[in-house]
Length: 436
Image (cartoon, rainbow, N blue to C red; front, top):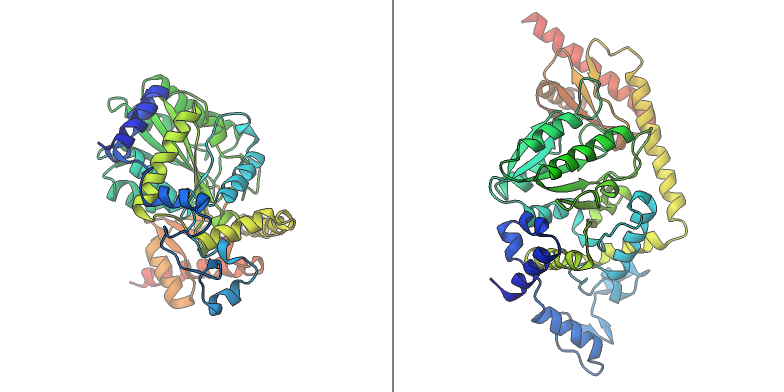
């Protein structure tokens, strides 16, 4: 094992042996090289005032070489802020700005010890980093039965972990904390579990309320007290889009110092929060018991980044930083929030009208981009295909009964027509079936 990796592991073992034990084989082996091209280039950048012949970029007239045809479209920004490589952990000013935003929007974090957000190539990359660091073959990854399908690729296919499902909703149509608890305690013999909490949930658009949040954290704490090391990943992709009386903070704040056997990891980003899907700017943030532990986790994370993408794109990091620092940012974001809330509320009022009750019910939703219909009479895939081929309407079929509808991308005035077309399609399929 590389001496740097061994040193990081010794730090984790000393600061919190449970976190050390959570690491995958890759997580134990990975490190960020302190000697080599990156470190020598960083030293040269600080000291080489005459000539810096270290890093693989081109310089012209004292600034990064660039094409006018590109710079003309980006003239607001200095070449140094878009063409040079960003550091592996991300643009420092952006990391600082995102941390400030995170603390303001999640007051429950308070004075708890958390690391500086590390920039990822959006949220999938953040989840992939966590999978690399903590998931080994056979490790349990606990997610509800209504989930984002990419979890299977990220944890099960790439890392060989075992997906463990529990029903998202209980009989009261609230979050099924008892199901989470049962799935956790089923891992007692393994002594380790990875829990993914995705709120607002994709595909249902559900976020738990305050009491449900307490039940979730209690289940995780009880599992830790029973001797299970729990890595909790809060997938906060749709954070901030809370439209009703649900939690309005990430559970990361509650989980940050809940137990030495619990490692809370927040994965979020500008992707959905700031409506910049194609920018691919996300963050991964750790909570911990000491600065030394957080530094070791950061070094291992940077090692994963260096070994995969080297560093994230610099231009999009600069664009997001510019937005965060803009005086108009808050007002403009609030305007978009109101539009999204209007679409969610209109969707709910249409569904609650009673006119579609013979065709479907719907799963509780109060946030995010999506909602899910629970079909009563037709197959979801058959309905999806019919809608697409006969009416030019795109939806997502999940299993035999569930149809996901992204109200986020439908203008409020068009939502009623959308659901009328879905209902019409149900009736058309029923008619065909009855004639056979």
